[in-house]
Amino acid sequence: MAMNTALWILTVFLGVAFTIGGTAMLVLSKERYRSLHETQRWVDDFTARQVKVIAAIKLLGGLGLLLPAIGDLAPGLVPVAACGLALFMAGAGTTRFRRGEVQSLVGDLVFIAMFAFLAWGRFDLEPFV
Image (tube, rainbow, N blue to C red; front, side, top):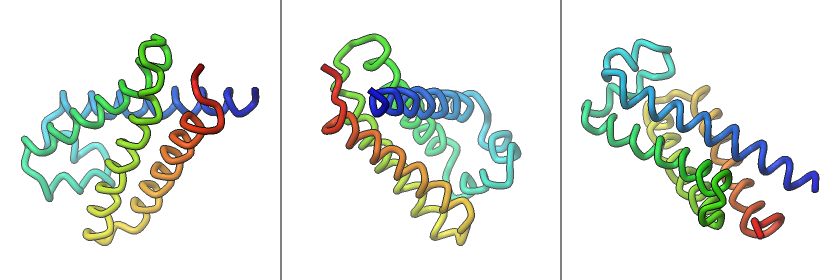
């Protein structure tokens, strides 16, 4: 019971965070998004179109965590979305590593761990029934 609650909290937290983050990236220009915080300078390595594609992936991943779980529509997709977002964050971590942004890389590794835990939890420990 406690594990199921923890997985729900993690699902909602990550789903909302990535849905909001992806939406912000989609509606803001590349330059405006970059100016939000110093940790967003990674966008300098990408074109405006690539940033929008990254934003769409982030948004769809967040929705992939939320909609199946909350709407009870194919809840088995939640751990699949978590795996996809773990891979997405691995790409983000690679960009941070290449840019020498070690502090931000640590955050990306934490996200990878949370997504991996969520996937493991929903695939094996407390799957939706």
